[in-house]
Length: 386
Image (cartoon, rainbow, N blue to C red):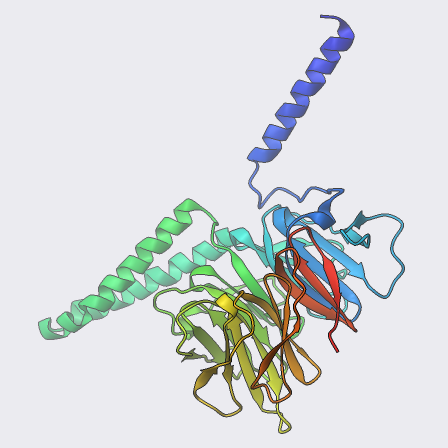
């Protein structure tokens, strides 16, 4: 073999080894690749603050764009030709939730229990929590609960033990399941995140995971024992506002509500047995919340101000709703086909306001009169319906 061919062969071999080594790395330790087509990859969620938008997606991709600024000379172009900046991200797991806390502070959550923090408006990110640390707390909490029940069981009479058998069995199973999950690795995703201020926030996810921070994400504490979720149903979406209202949308038609920034929680069974993916809130003239829970198959349930019973709204879409936003005096929902459904100002009627279908949609944010959608092939925009 000639020396030029030898060099080419060695280079190709080295490239293959390098790519193989790259692929074998733990995605929690593998920085997201800077990709020319990052703005055309699958995007899984989006948020906005003012004119600034953050979009997150597969393989650790985070995109940022200021819709009030002239497009940068360098960046990645979406399918509409708009230029986005791909952020520097220390992981390559799929990212599922994102929130701005203020103009410079933002948080992202994703698969393998990851939580990321940015202090420069989303340009660069650092990992502050992950599924390894989450598993440690889940196992410790399950072990403590099992041991507490076991101590009470051992001290109880035979008649009392008969009443405690089911609880002890459930606690033992939960501990064994937590240990098995930890041995498998940090596989349980976080699905949503919300912060009330730069210090205090929450992340929620699969199998009843909910963690709280009071120091800006440096430390996280499992608070699953505050919620009534003995079968560890998934928490799919998290809503919060400045009044202290927190809402978690979950499996089995459950909504979990706190009115004091997560200190105590109430489980609300809506009468629906399917998945809710999120909640949205509009307020009446007295400032009281009217809550909408939306999800699978175009289902939307409404809880009136001061009411205790949920009721199902007649939906013009049978496709799953993936996002709901309060816009002026109505709530606007987007389904997975990109169609828009709005409430009326009373919040009692749903109507289709845009029936145009496109590539699958995963999320929606608002910038002035523009809606920014995340989904297959990255970002796209729609005009806000009048």
